[in-house]
Amino acid sequence: MFEIDEKKTRADYVAEAPIGSIVAFVTEDGKYKSAKIINRSSKRSVLKLRTSYGKEFQVPYQSVLWVKSGERWPRGIYNLLKGKVNEGSAEDGKTYRKGGSAVAGQAEGA
Image (tube, rainbow, N blue to C red; front, side):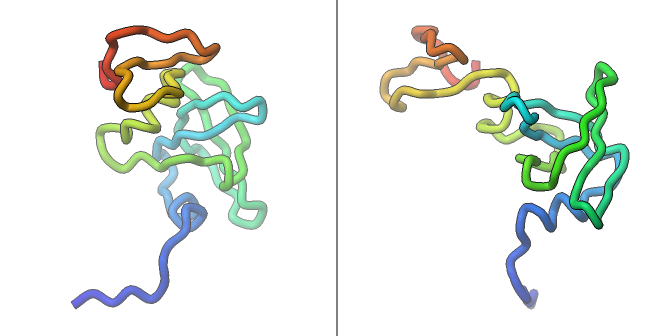
């Protein structure tokens, strides 16, 4: 059987993510973005990331939300990256966007 010594933290996953992995992160101004890891400083706990349009960011491990290991983002991370924030209850069936405007009748995955 498998033995688990201790639980891995998010920082452990970020530190072990291979160069070239895609991550979701929060910028200093609070925006959610995704980018590829191009370099890492384990000593300073910082990643150097490059977005698909070429902008580079230096991001601390704590600002990384998710390391993408498959083909799809988890729904919550995907919605953050697309700017969708669900502020209502699950029953109201509305998706809220930044700024608080509701889009009626739209399911979260749509």
